[in-house]
Length: 115
Length: 110
Image 1 (cartoon, rainbow over the protein chains, first blue to last red):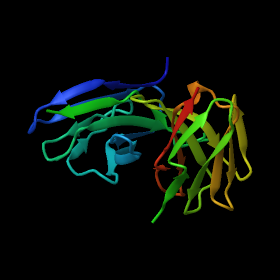
Image 2 (image 1 turned 120 degrees about the horizontal axis):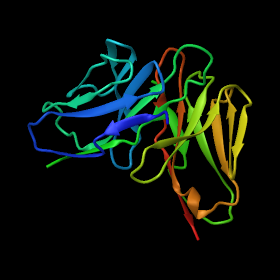
Image 3 (image 1 turned 90 degrees about the vertical axis):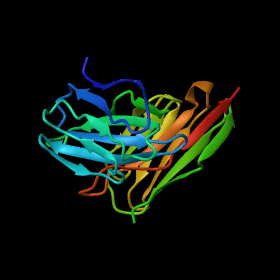
Image 4 (image 1 turned 60 degrees about the vertical axis):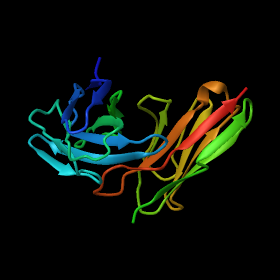
């Protein structure tokens, strides 16, 4: 089935460690996104990419890094510079070109907890 | 600054009742999306509204869009417990990314 796969679903990190969250999609979507959600809050955009080997900062990019080496993959690294990384991270993708609704499709999310 | 507001933010209602959630936005957008999120889960697409006057219905939920008023409504008819979730609206201003509202947390009580 087509969709977006995020892993791991749950991750615990010690302070000072970098961690990488995986996001893979087989929807042949052009654009991919990372959002952060804090408890009881809305979504905030971290990074997005509309084409391979190119990405842009969102509203809260500090302390995060990404890469887009393949169309299907958009991993997010939470670095030690991110002071409050405990959150629910959501990866999403969408088509850009052509006749489409532009709808965002979401993965199941990764919950990161800093110990 | 672009703002997307939802009203109410919290809604507790009894089964069988009707209610409407409102989504207002502050800039031009001809597309609006509604998503549902269950506790601890990801977002699920409910409705995609692509033009002024668009109306979509699925089960007990009906969404509409008035681009001139910059307003979308999500109407709940005869609520059931399974509708308990957080509902987000989102707009996509031209040349920009999705902008989400803060969410409306709906609790349907038996």
